[in-house]
Length: 319
Image 1 (spheres, rainbow, N blue to C red):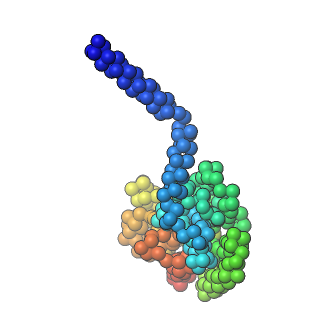
Image 2: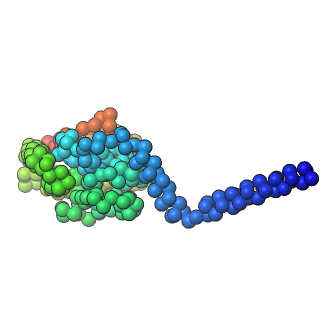
């Protein structure tokens, strides 16, 4: 009799385990999209409950999408508000996918500032995942004329001046008490930006239209401001990806056109340009696309644009 009781107890425990197993399997079989939503919701709850004491509740929260917008917004707020970039500044905006913690930061934000025009591929799904009816979303590219096949609108200082005005206005809407401060900071920044362009007016205030030889066609907005053109002879490819004939054609083009300077971006592999310099003597300069910025070597946007204009000046001075 005692052994029968033990056997029945074992059967009972086994039955419970099987039920739990079947329940677990049913949970695992939930559609991936439902699991993703559940994961996000649970993560949001954890983050919001566990990190509330880490946020300065006395300041409104502003979130930006990548370096130029972050730097400009930070400058205009001048530490009056908490400004954070949703992605690491050193990560290209195209490659970023927000984590649940990143999404959670938008639940308490008052303003999200993005470029738009499909640059932030995560934007639509992220906004659908949050529940923050008070969040204002500023899409900066809605306020300028966009060019085809190039999304680097922030390389135009004229565009950035327009962006600064839109950011100042949006900040004033979420924080009316700071409107005077935001307006003054915006005017100061815009004046510095205009003075920078005036300082380098010799690049565009002339009769000759210069051509920049670049790694890839990422500078349409910049050359338009300077009344210049751009030509890519490498197509942004690595030296190892180019055939012997393609390399020869590039070298022949540089020699035939007596190209003095060729520009690569900050992410380009140096091998190709080292070889071109060795074969032709062409000078290699960096033109920053300003999609990323190292925290260790952080420089403001206008300082980086000064470096770009100084590098472009070598084409004019070598003429």
